[in-house]
Image (cartoon, rainbow, N blue to C red):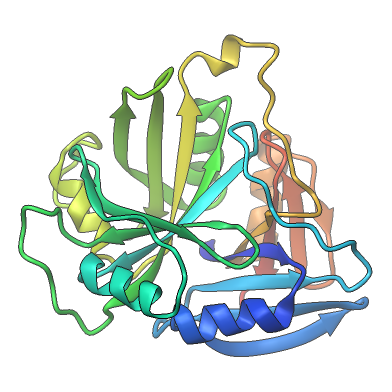
Length: 281
């Protein structure tokens, strides 16, 4: 299985597409309609990874309001020079936070799209290191989700969806949380230790889409803390491609309920978001 994209609900396609193409620099590569719903696929240079925006004209327009109990948090873009990236945003009269080096995690800045989806910029190197000048100066890097059971969800991504855990980060902020980063199992990190600092900049320099999983410490023991699917705003699906026959057998082996479509398989995770796997072309 190969991670390809994720889809977000939008309500103002004209304004939002303008932001993605003119401000962020995405290219609109596909537009199609299914059952009255319109989808827009946008990507940077790498044709393997894209964002899919979903527009249902029948829904009441609603801005996404992110909460710590949502099963979705943000997505991230990897950039050569975060100062240049922030300057580009500000010249279009959009607000973006001042870049800062967050411990030994990354050199970061935050903004949001016109639908209020949080966007994180991550420089491919730490602030104290030289900036890069790559053939792909900006890449779609991370989709960030949350879990109450990191062991079970990591097992799903590794054993069913062919991903591999490359990086783990502990963050002692608030009540504390751990971040897990999974990518294509065929990648080779510089160090086998998932806590190794050098794996972090390595990850930011890959032209691959990773999944970041946030787990709040001890949330699995808190019956009052439940992750919510926002349904009509925010994250809609995480999208893979692959061999459906092989996937079907893996899902049965792991006792995961799924829906078989003509050209895809869909199933919900323990954290209440939907994964779609389309037949490999």
